[in-house]
Image 1 (cartoon, rainbow, N blue to C red):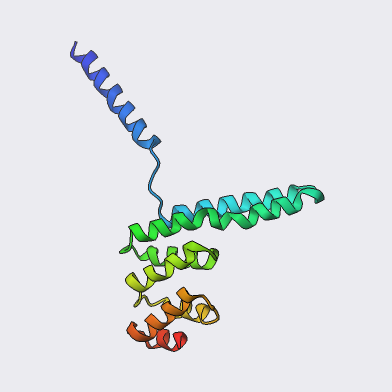
Image 2: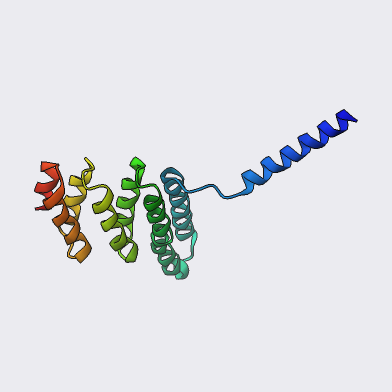
Length: 155
């Protein structure tokens, strides 16, 4: 009897463990970049394999790939502001999305990552941007950052 109860308990624990592994895992910067790379490679493969008349459609699909991930990268960064990779996720959004997600990422950088040592590189890239969000970030770096290089790039 005790053996039967033990077998039933083990089966229940295994079933619970299987249910836990079936639930989606939260995104991490690493998992997002890996998934993005996989989807992007698949789009390139589809483009290369497409007949000439289908290539424009495949190219259009390839160009849509970053937009499909931008919201997830932003959500990760907002939910994990203290994680060092949150900054990298925000820069990914700014680099790969020209729409609403990029304009939402810039204020998050100002609020949480103004003194990140990597921000000078971002300021250099954004110095050519004419978007209001980029200008606000550059102004915030000039006014608030402790990094002299970042201030110089923002100027």
